[in-house]
Length: 153
Length: 153
Image 1: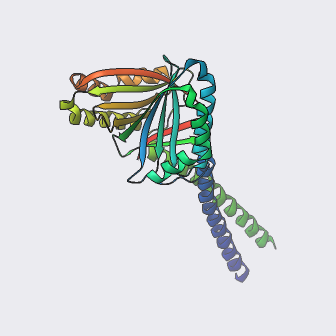
Image 2 (image 1 turned 120 degrees about the vertical axis):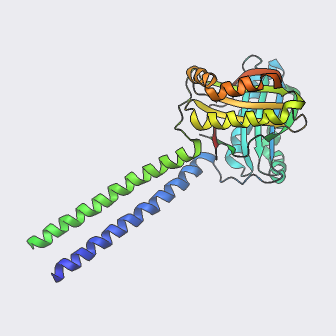
Image 3 (image 1 turned 180 degrees about the horizontal axis):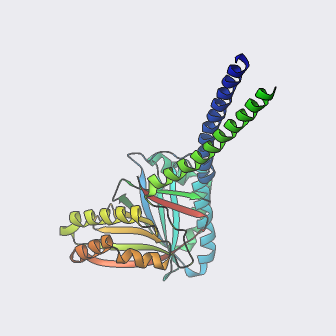
């Protein structure tokens, strides 16, 4: 009976060890899943955060070249900037020269940091002559519970 | 030794059982986490999926009432429709009567199902007299790797 009691204790220890390992593994997996998605851990949207629709019309002769710049700046901003929460670019099917970008910056500081970045300046200076019109339309999301997550896969 | 061998087998069985329970528990937790967020498991965006910017101008005298309808239809659609992947409504800060809704439907069928739903029909019929102009502008996302997830928190 002495041997059996020791073995029963051993069973309990093994079971508790395996159980605790499982829980630890799960929380690490979740963190890794989030990090894999967004490139960097993102800041929380602050009081002075910005939600914007940038409406751009591109000269047709520069459209293909413009699109490459737009895809590049969107990808780098989303993947590397902690304060860029969305950068989702859409091309109008009926008017392919009309581009709309949904941009969300976590704060005014995050926006300043974004427009000062080398990737944004490359886009801005590189496409100046391609852009016919640009409208920056700041927005208010209608429903604070309605959330967007934007990431590069 | 015969008793000890049986107990060693028992230890192994307990350890394997706890381990398999842990893995099962983890995947259920992940599913629950997703379900909590979006309400229902979402369909994958198909070949005939729709990404749209709906641009609405509302008569000022109906604006407050319109916003309630818009918030309601967005919440219900996102939470209950498997084919409604986004329904993100924005109000222009400079022209509050101008609303833009980013709508993504997983397929043409999902879109048909959406406009046939009772919550959409309530919104559509209830706001007809409030809407001054409506433009449905279908879009093509510039970068297929750039993903949006939209959910009600």
